[in-house]
Length: 268
Image 1 (cartoon, rainbow, N blue to C red):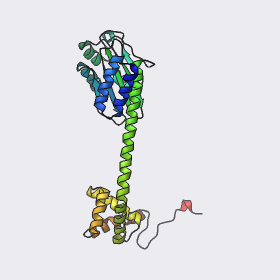
Image 2: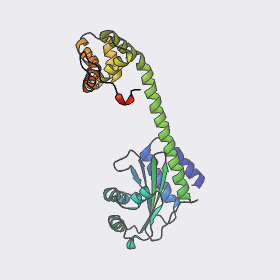
Image 3: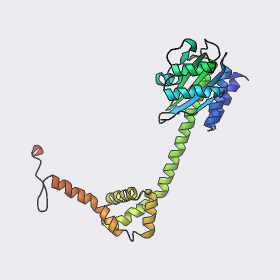
Image 4: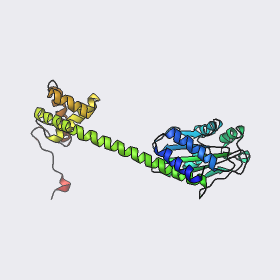
């Protein structure tokens, strides 16, 4: 397969929104592009991830090599993620940095590996290639594997921005559709409590938190019932800001029939 066609196919897969299939295809392409490679692995993580990153490997035995790195927190993949630089092991038989990874790799017959990280817009992609012989090297630069990683990371970041934009549009659409109902509910609260719009909305928000219901759902129910049966509870919630104000005034030295002492430091 021509290199240009290979890269174009990989970018297309990443845009289709199938992470598992995209990572698997990416790992296969990385192994195909790297001379003397016996297999490859690809991982993708975001800034919000706290658990093990999604991973794809070209051979089942390589899964253990990736898992031991997440479990121990040591190995070429964690090192590359922390440093942002390519990390390799020329000969694992003489490697001393990552003992658990080294033992697992040698047991699988792997003698060398190289990991390349790619960071785009809160997403970090890693490509790791493995060799049965020592001396496998893949560095950043104009190599086929590196160009593939650059294209794949750009495609993943573009897909994430697209999905975030869709979610934001959906939230805005929901807000526009529910805004009239919320305004009507606030109008009912203003009538029942004899308060202003800010107090009415604050009361509706606190009632939503207290009942663990969505603000829009609560507003819809309030409009349907016109507030009937909730007058006492609404007045109780509506009085809380005023109660808090009276408590603050008491702490400042004011009380019934008294006024708070003036702030001498600001008196002119």
